[in-house]
Length: 329
Ligand SMILES: C[S@@+](CC[C@H](N)C(=O)[O-])C[C@H]1O[C@@H](n2cnc3c(N)ncnc32)[C@H](O)[C@@H]1O
Image (cartoon, rainbow, N blue to C red; front, side, top):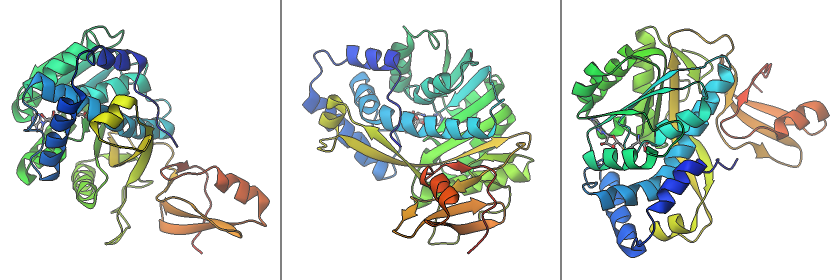
């Protein structure tokens, strides 16, 4: 499914900064930042206003798509969840806060924190004219310090952040975020085996502390997948002209791979199964790789079973499957 575009207010705020911007310079900055990320250096390459803008233009659409997909999955399982306050940890240019504002009309108190002054400045600039986010609070400093002073929030998010921390700092940050979580904590990571491993660690750590998984897993048991298998999802997003220029890309779209977990203080009333891969459609059947409460199964809808086949045709990778009575083959 194609992801939603960035909110109109955010697009307008970003577009306002394109005037006079050298695409070549911005593309070089975005490339250097991306290389540093891939080499495990995190966001240290983002040092100036120009770096922050290049990063925002190159990465905000994909990060936003991943966070929106994660929050939509949470809302689908908990349709009654109406958070009023948000704490966005490692908020960077504010992407996850924009996504949360879009996903939850109920939000009206936004606290962001991040150690990077250039990204904080960009976030404040982009939200200055926003109808929802203009009054946000944005604390500058290391999460280890800033989280202690941050207010509790109904919804706490860490989007593409915990990969920048070493094991000890990551565990501390996860515990500190959970301590600030009144209802639900959402952690989103790049959809790589390493990102999946970090999500599994956070999930196990917080389940041991009393948390319940709302999404994507239909249970609080250990993940049933065995290596080399691993869990992640994908969001297709359309590329704007400037996005293509910055990423030196030809294709009009990009597929963002991500992994997430939403953990709540209360167990959800319903726990749908989850489609873990692109459905396989042949002439005779559709097969879903489905994570269920009883483990991962291949659920098959033969074409001759018209009702089930028609139902399966609507499912895509990442979807929740409610009322499933699918059983292993
Ligand atoms: C890849 S960016 C993601 C930004 C934002 N969450 C998003 O989804 O667009 C990671 C962010 O985490 C921040 N960060 C990493 N370690 C941090 C720490 N120990 N304390 C505060 N912020 C941190 C970085 O400064 C950077 O802004």
